[in-house]
Image (cartoon, helix red, strand yellow):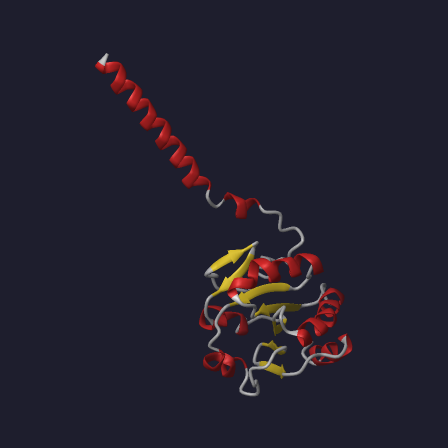
Amino acid sequence: MQEKKIAARFGLYIRFASILLIVIGCKDLPDAKRDTSGLADSLSPEKASEKWPEPSSRISGIPVYENFDDLEAIFNFKNDTTYVINFWATWCKPCIEELPYIEAFQLKNKDKKVRVILCSLDFPNQLESKLIPFIEKKKLASTVVVLLDGKYNDWIDKVSPEWSGAIPATYIYNGAENYFVGTPFQNTGELEGIVNSFL
């Protein structure tokens, strides 16, 4: 009788341990299996000369960087690609107004050595509720990254000494050549004219 009780108790422990292992092993599955087909291709491996910094985390496939230093490498790629890095946020009306021009430019130039990176400065508590739904709804073609570093005065000069800190702001570079735009684009041609001088 005593042996049956021990065996039954042992069986319960085994079942409990099995369930616990399943729960622990699967805790990341919802994010891993989430359909991100409507999201931007965040870190496309197409350009082998880009060594992207490791993000602090990801949200729906979008890389999230806690501070600017972790992201700084994307401002220093040494290859023949022209990079258009736009700082924006979903709460910024001028940013949202210029975004269609930037997206049209990205789509028009997708076969050229040009890469648009949209660096979101959205608030951490609004990534799930505002940023991700916005990206999904707009089906953004540009690469999207998130920068959570709110200490702007510590890093905006690293982007450009001309930057006041207001957004939208766009940094364009190819190798050692660079150009900074601290105002919203009014049309696609305006951005295209600047980028063409790098090609």
